[in-house]
Image (cartoon, rainbow, N blue to C red; front, side):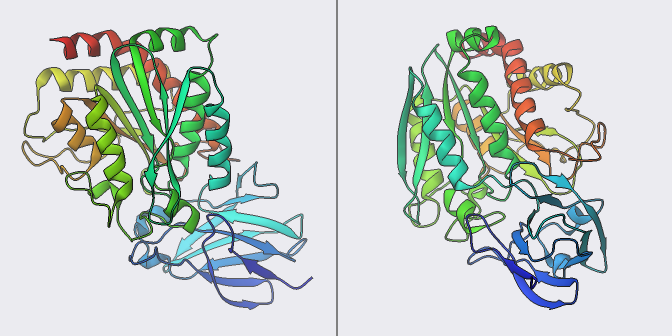
Length: 378
């Protein structure tokens, strides 16, 4: 078979430069109306048994070039199991070397979470008795912004993911969280639902997800810089979600993301907001400590710099929700690479570990939820 490369499918992103023998030169396409790029997802056919060298030539100009260092690409034959492959980065070029066992093989920056899988997740969850489904509105491409409400106790807990669509680990996390929350035999779930109502947006950026974007929606807007003043024209996704939050209130919130450069799981908080309270911060710290105890896949030594007092970026959701509602809010970051503290040589950081981390996050919430309730009642 002749070698061929394609990405004309849900979430696909690559541009073929040239094929010379067993070497395939490629470039990642930018997000629409944006300079962001780093997400890739493509298929190679005709390469079975051939020692392929896949070179992505424009990596130096990507959104986070430090993310390529010590990174290993993902490969799959069935789009269910994604293993890591031999990868190197030098001179701005990412090189992946592999001899596929099949004439049909897929490559991606991280295990994709397609819109088709998203629809299956929502359809399955929406059929659960006691869970309410609603579309909060339409995206710029005309997709529904899916919202799930699991009614329970008086605390208002918001879980939302994938503001940056290329951070697919965020929706793998959502899959694990939803699965556990709907398990009525789970004692942690039972207790959490007695104390809280859960509001869930599994994918904040359907358009960017389908288009194969790294960081933006159909208008080229970074949604996590819109929470101070969202608009129908640029950021209807944030507009609709924030409007619903204004109706319900927010006591606890987790915004789920992925980080290109840091090979660890970590939290970012709301330090630096104008109304920052010691009690509010103490609950964030207690959750973080509970999560360290819940899983060795979480740590607190690595993470982002903490903003100075009064210097929080209120255009980002975690800071905005903490300021607007007095919520205990946080951003969870997971790696594109691996957890260097607990590496997996075959799969790296993987969908299964994302799902397991979600379960541990619910354990941590269970550990602090009474303290959150007391804080909000005060």
